[in-house]
Length: 78
Image 1 (cartoon, rainbow, N blue to C red):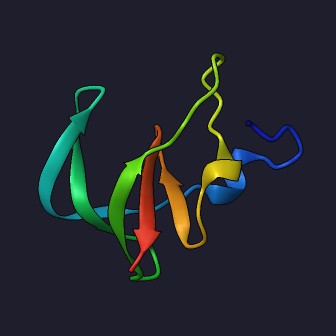
Image 2: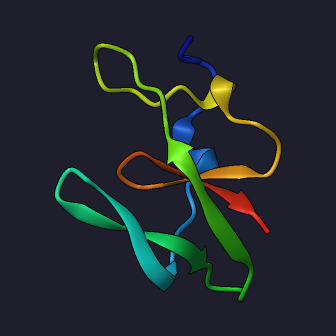
Image 3: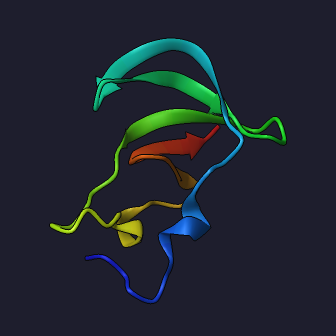
């Protein structure tokens, strides 16, 4: 279920840089094994975020330590 009261922007990692080989392609875009954020914290690819029919990301399905890398990738804190 998509939350209308919790903006998905609260869960987005920004200023990231890819690290390691690509493990997949999503929407024609390479998916890195890991990424680093602007503070040097590392995250590992965990999957693709669920979306509703309107394309909104289901942030309620995220587990603790999981974050969104746009457009809809999930990375988990290492």
